[in-house]
Image (cartoon, rainbow, N blue to C red; front, side, top):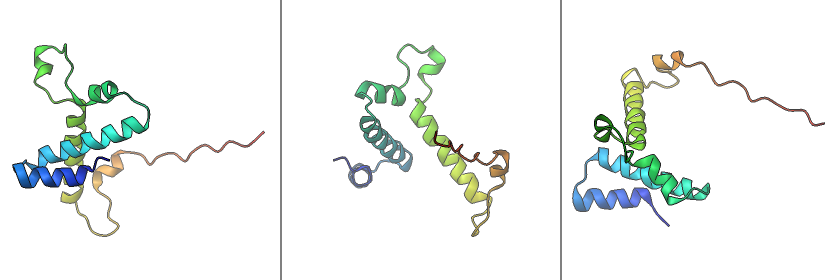
Length: 109
């Protein structure tokens, strides 16, 4: 079984990879695990990670969808930490997103 955290630690120690690279590696490994568990093929998962093959020249140098998602998550986490991480405090950007709606309950019958 793949262990993304153990493999990332080994890569950091043996190759000195940057934290940014290790985060992407860990996310890709977990995406592969979840995708296979959900019945996706390796190609399906790879299409989420790699850049489009026939992309226009300006898109061929841009990061893939997974790298973009990881970068956005890191930016949001940094923003949340910068705005205060005291117990119970919610970052100001949380107000921009309405709370999730309660799930709809269906009555039997």
